[in-house]
Image (cartoon, rainbow, N blue to C red; front, side, top):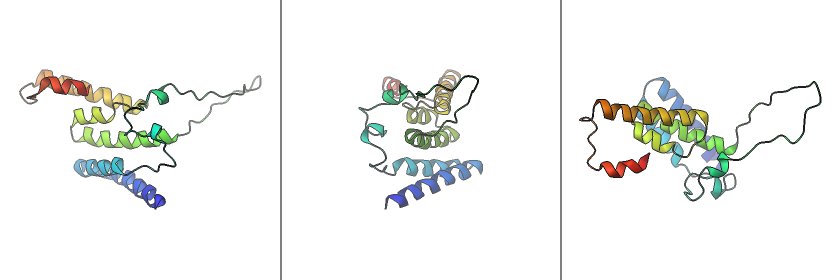
Length: 156
């Protein structure tokens, strides 16, 4: 059964990319929400690695180091290819969801989904979404009427 969840996740990831390429943003958003909603395999992702355990934020991941213990021999240099870790695979699912929100012009939702993500693309998209929210609020405050302005400040 666990293999079927992973194959379903892979199909949803592919669907999100294809739907976004075809400018079917609402359908991509739906697929992204389904992708994030599929339960993670507890054997692969311990509770400290899951997004839904709010007590275990991304602080541990943020300061984890991937040091290479051995020193290369003199005169030899190499560039290691970054390997996607399990956490990054989960983070990319959240990036796909946030990107679909962004494409639907739901900038606050996109920023909210990416609030704990540390990948370069995720950080950029979150910052850009927050920038657009602030810019649009300044330029067109009548469009973004917020009946509870103090409650929405927590979001950022």
